[in-house]
Image (cartoon, rainbow, N blue to C red):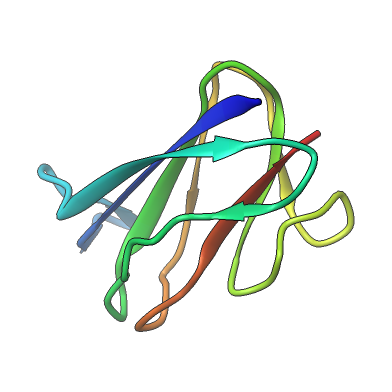
Amino acid sequence: MSTMHVTIGEAVQAGAPVFATHPRAAEAVTTSGTAASATLFPLSGEIARISAVDAALYVSADVTASATTGYYVAVGTTIELGPLKDGSIISGIEA
């Protein structure tokens, strides 16, 4: 089992959407060989910042994460997904 940190917040336009200074919500999600989802409720236009804390992950928004539907996130790195839709589901599974 490993940990996936998920933070959501407002997107700010700076040539390309970037994360605003202060996140609106954050959650630590325990992941394993079965996909796990964050319980956060993103708002339309927000960005999710997802960090793979202690294992590599596949992550996605709005579909269940898997090796074929997710983005690979190496251990100790972060990815941003967005802009999101209202209620987008962020999920992750160990790679």
